[in-house]
Image (cartoon, rainbow, N blue to C red):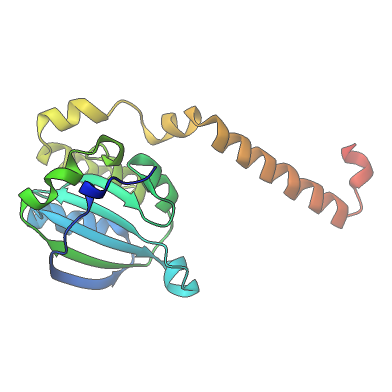
Length: 184
């Protein structure tokens, strides 16, 4: 997916920059502060390995609206799936007027259901419920069809990739233990 040029998010006013152990801290603070703006989140592997991986999450009145992973050029739920890594995270939070996010928030392929970041990144049911309560009704109706497990099970390519990786690992271990003949 290539992000259209009109979807650029302008630079906002930095209001917070810190390292957090859990993505839920950032999501909860955005909800409490009714943030309209965005957060740039960099996971621990990017911090340690310097690979530049990061995700952008936008918010309107504290409720997540879109997710984008510039490294993979994937947006929406796919970006969250790429990003579901354990903390710590370096987080920079920026504030913007809602009108500055209109073009980005209108791009369907980047949007996420309001509670999905809390479910996927924080695995926090109470935060997901708080987010659901704060989300506009039209956003809840539009995007909460599948749970993370249902969505994962529907992704046949991802499941096959996991199976192939497991097969390769089993073959390597069998060879290491001298059991290669038993696998054939």
